[in-house]
Length: 116
Length: 110
Image (cartoon, rainbow over all chains, first blue to last red; front, side, top):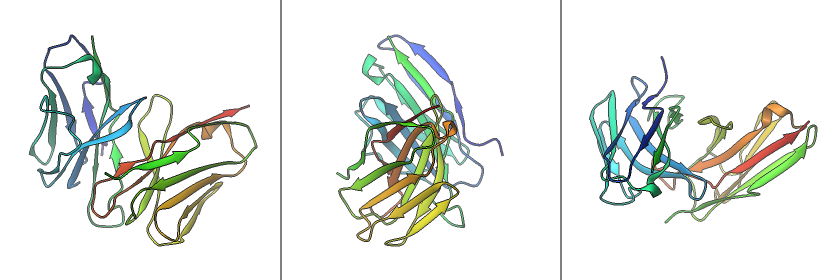
């Protein structure tokens, strides 16, 4: 398996523009997580899904952020409109809920977002 | 909400010295995991502890889970330059909501 795949790896945009980050989890994983990492706030859990259904979005900073998981192999995190304070590395992670590797998070390489 | 703090925030050691990072949660955890993130990389799973008082070893790394399941530690014996990175603990209060600690950044001086 190629692991968790995220795109784009780097994104530079201007304030006010829409940003869409994409994630392909590991095949068979039934949990998917979106995290944001900054120096000031560390690794923050934004939202997580189970079997494509959002379970907890209490970490989503505000209405400008939205996440979807239309099927088991694809998720998006959208920011509209983007602001400079959204600059961060956004990680997607996935895991099994059962079996010997249950609950072990496998992270993607991350999407580094810079909002000017 | 749940908070997971780690100390120290930074640690510089000479190669060959030991290193310990401590993780403290404001709530009881059902289990605790440890991850390592190399500079410029992504977090990579190291180990999971489930039982109260559990101790696990991986070569030079020793992991402990506290009796009250609210704290944990990672000890590295005789650090090497390959140990450089940030070490995170992560735990869910009861479900799959993995909250990451603040992290300890380790620098090993050759």
